[in-house]
Image (cartoon, rainbow, N blue to C red; front, side, top):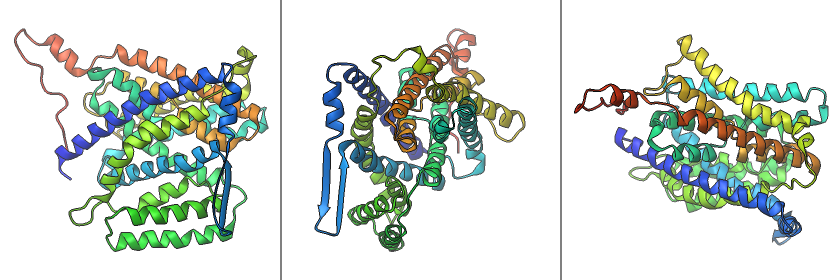
Length: 411
């Protein structure tokens, strides 16, 4: 892949995710409006609608609509994440330690510190500790959507850094789900999952570029993983690892990425937001926000992300472990750290895995929504007043002169 085509792909990705972030905001706002209106009963009843899929006596899946959204549609979201992760590791920003070091340090700080903040606040509430991973997540679509509203005030390098941090964050979230939120494992079903996985490996080794065989085997893999007790969305990530980046002149991975992006950004994630963001505030006061579970999540997203990401970047840069991207200032890094506290999609998703009690689920939603909102407002305020090096060059340049090019593409 040439340098210019890589830059075009990055810009197209950012544009798609940014527009998707705006769609997420709209879907979440509609869900909150419906949940706090006379339509609440209809909303809850709609999500509880039983949907049954069966194939004779061999397999039967009976779940409410909400779980089909969270287990089924979100598997496609995780499939897209898997494709992006593989591309970034093989050909993108994570292909070398020099390029990946700063976002790796930032992502680790942005996962560890929020979890510690949550645990500290919930130390006296052991029933809540299972939610420690909720504030560790970052919603890339929301964050990039807000960055898009700032236009050229935000360097492209900052958007690329946020993208890399979010991808590494997603890798961490996937590992957390696999290790800590898998229960009652059915070893037989998990063993059967090896068959479609082996089929995917054979397709990869044979250099098959057509996508239909991958999707057929992926559907079988999803069913086996679902029946095994391991969260079914992980089947999407596993499938992505077998999709070849290039086969001759064909580029299956890139083709699938481009084909799936609009569906994920404009349908799957907004549907997930509508189904999961609807929380009723009836009878809820300041006490609900200050309860350990919701406060721990909100504080983890707002305070933990800022300290974790900014602190990790500062230490890594000052110690010489990593270098700052060209054109990015410390104010930009701080604003990014704030925006990374928008945990929305993945935080709600992990919250749904962590708790089954409706009261705890509502507390999770309240913590995620309040923490994400505060993070968004603070991040936008910080970045709105930030000046880029090109701004300073323009201000200091003599009349009639042109500012130097600060964002030339580099290998």
